[in-house]
Image (cartoon, rainbow, N blue to C red; front, side, top):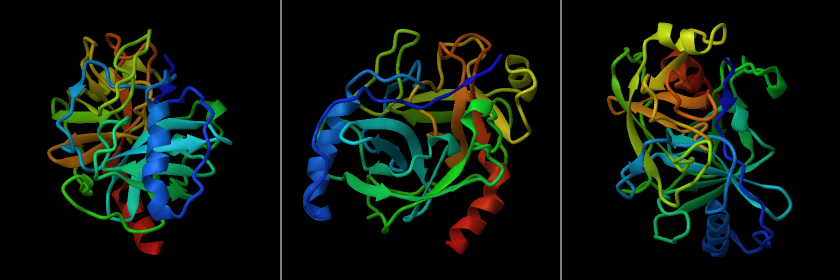
Length: 278
């Protein structure tokens, strides 16, 4: 059975774009982005989740997209250094707004940081033709235009050099939908504990579509996992980034239809080489 990419498309709302110098426009733009974050979206979420403790996932980033005036919360991402994010390749757009230090999407809480990004480095093996439904190598680096200011609410996460084993307990987070197929979206960052599933179960769920560079995680009986709006977000195992949300079935978190992740351990060399060269 095919799976869908797990990204959010925000409900459009007209509003003026940023027009002041960077320091002055941060709160203004964040407020505008926040207004949209509460509207209904269509694509992948965290099912069976609970609200994360504020800033307990300081590597979590939100990716927003704007066409003319409407802003859209598109995907999640993970800060892996003070200058780089890791996300899903299918989240690429001509440019994106990145928000770090975020928890409540409608509230200005102090540690938020905003970046407009245009430097994208999708894996060279990713098929840019999304109509092909080819989910191989669905992973991408984003270079920030300046270094993030690190602190308690903004910290990079180490990437996992060791591939995780089935049964490993992991944590997912994001602002994706919390119900499906009738979707509802949270205002605060959501967290859920899930398990790495055996590769044979992943292949059973999605015949002919799972490569060795992918992994499935969630609950085999369903009821918990990534969904619409969570694409590109982190799968954290043993305190390191083990996976990047790629896609899953719809409705989300059905029995025997877990979410699919790009397995980060297979991309360590490419990640480091790209970050060193650019």
